Amino acid sequence: MFKREGRPLNRGMGIFQMIWLIYLASPIYNILQLPVHEMWIGLAVLLVFVIATVCCYLSESKRLLLILLMMAIIVFFCLRYDLGFWFMGFYAAPVIGLLRSKVQFIAALGIMAVLFVFVLGFHLEQFSGNELAVILPSSALMFGLPFILRAGMRSRELRARLNSANEEIERLVKNEERQRISRDLHDTLGHTLSLITLKSELAEKLILRSPERAVAEVKDIQMTARAALKQVRELVSGINTVSVKDEIRHTEQLLTAAMIELETEGDFGAVQASPITQNILGMCLREAINNVVKHSKATKCKVELIENTSQISITVSDNGVGAQCPSPGTVSSGRGLLGMKERLDLIDGKLEFQSSSESGTQVTMTVNKIVKNQQAGGEA
Image 1 (cartoon, rainbow, N blue to C red):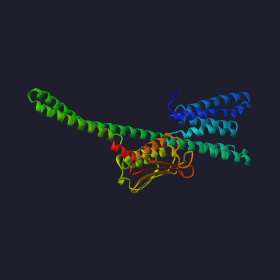
Image 2 (tube, rainbow, N blue to C red):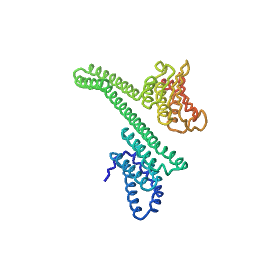
Image 3 (tube, rainbow, N blue to C red):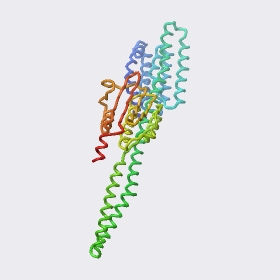
Image 4 (tube, rainbow, N blue to C red):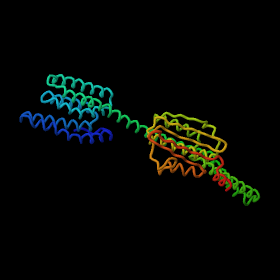
């Protein structure tokens, strides 16, 4: 029995391809018109062909041998009965496209081409011009199918690898963040808590012998505890913070992995903005680039920074397929864009969205350098 070895992609294509077995009704009809002896031979060989076709999609290791068996059966029918059986090659051609080895792929196509020339030459004397006008274009399509399916399979594999790489990057970033938090806790908060423990033990011993010194130690403990609280706040505020400078480096790595050409304009390393503004702009830039990679099908992406005395504006544009949007300049109901808008609202920022199938998508994030929400938070 054949072991199912193929990836889900191959198995899915096999199930789809099996639907087309219904078109074997034409060869079956032609075989049924033959004498009884020839009819039974033809039906038996055709059954082997069907089994080989099904097994081609279930066994990757035996795929080339099964393709050769299918070709041999097709040649058998063409030489023994009629050239019309050559069109059964449309069952072998898609499976050739699933061969992962380039050597096997070229070998299978070469053998198929040689057999086509052999079969065509065998029946050449019986041909009329009309028959050639039918079989030649059909055979050209038959030989083109493996290339089309192979390209589609490679595209799916590349997307799967890109998704896997993005997941790995995300996992590494999380691990690095955990390690950073661990180092900060050990180097700062751990030392401070140890100091509080030692001073509290000392204050306990001094309560009866020297109350004045005990009171002084308790005051030191209070000051140290406040310092520890400040360290905790600084540590928490540092979690998941993003700067525009750091995010543009991440953008270059992500777009390079996605094989999208990046063009930048502006000095991203010299953005004059508060940490919270940097963080929100960085997160919005990350979301915009993720949308380009996941949905745009673009080959080029441009990130432009414009900064003046009152505003900072970042525009992300691509040459992709565009997206549906209720009206120009408004934000759709997509969660990614909605999340960007909500982040920018926190600092009185503005999000503009434009998209069309001709010009691609453009997202512009604009923030003021003087932010009411930040001033209020600082006063609080």
